[in-house]
Length: 115
Length: 113
Image 1 (cartoon, rainbow over the protein chains, first blue to last red):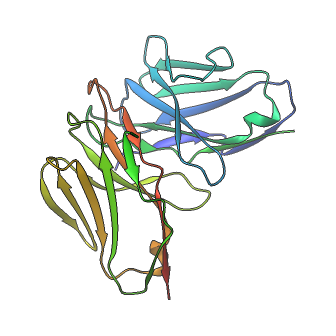
Image 2 (cartoon, rainbow over the protein chains, first blue to last red):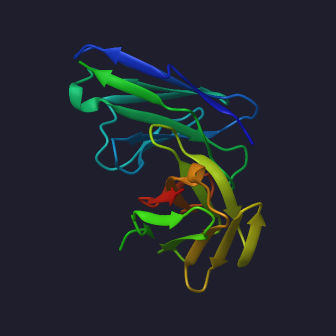
């Protein structure tokens, strides 16, 4: 299967600071990548769809000014959590797929803790 | 009605038994269907994909799709304790020009030795 990586795997930051998470497709190109958030014992929640060369599409209720997404190339999307607060502490996971309409592959996730 | 519905479980089966996981979806236009396994604290991993009606087998796993009934299932034969995880059903959604899909809430499976 295709490989998606994320960096960092975990990060601790102080309230009010910003954190950037990278998502890379290692062996394929992805015009679209997806960002999810998952709180403990809860289901995946799609946050936004990252589109290469254009603006991201955010799901209802997700603050686009707080969660900045940049899809600068066909293999890299970044999610920046701005002015992080403790309630932003969560497991952030990206996904991408090499072919439209077929499988998505998930990155290993980034665990964010805001103190 | 949720786009993708699964029984949250927990589903408990003894080792060696068949585990049956079910999923229904609301959009008749969906074309692609997937099962992911998620261990606690880890990200989901793809275990099966199915695109046409009928059964698809891969090792101990069999995916079944019935588009008329808007139903997809996953059977795990000879269940092992290592199969204990949450299983997520995913279905593609409109406009079908990217890989956007919706996930069910997941069914937690426990296989008891």
